[in-house]
Length: 257
Image (cartoon, rainbow, N blue to C red):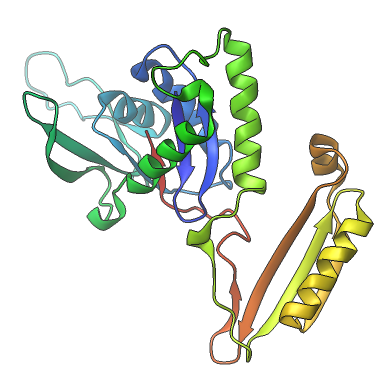
């Protein structure tokens, strides 16, 4: 199983199931890119598997041609090279004879990504949480999925829960009393729940602006009635508007494993 993960927003962008890891590289990258904004070029990170490099090169490349030299012999054939805007690095783990990790190094593969941005630690932490929350993925258990359809359905449900419902303490932001807080409470055919949440926000934070608005019909159709969400940003006088970390999906560095 492969996971496409946005490190800065802690969003699970894609979950792909395949028999082997090389077989899931291409569909995982395609599913992850389907969640990105148009013409965005994130920094990609993965482990040292060759399949990820080949899949990225197949999707983002230019054809390099060579002029004829006038000499005898066959001319050089055109070749595929990485797109100039593609940035990709790998985290390579070195193991000993007992498969214990003895060293970890990072390397740039395409482009010139900062090596400090090449890391998979957040994704590895997410994989541990994923196994902890899903009995179907627990090692050495009888609760594994007996059919692929059931596993896909369960993972889709978990992806929605992790992205829309699960609190992520790593995204918490401290709001000072002097900040001008702007809050929007969104709901899917649940005005009473939205009003109750808005009252709690008003009593605790006293925002400068508090709106109650419905979700779009597309999101309501997928989630059903009863969904309630919260969006905010704090406006500081010296810095201007400062959107929250989970307010939008930016072209953030991605870890794919």
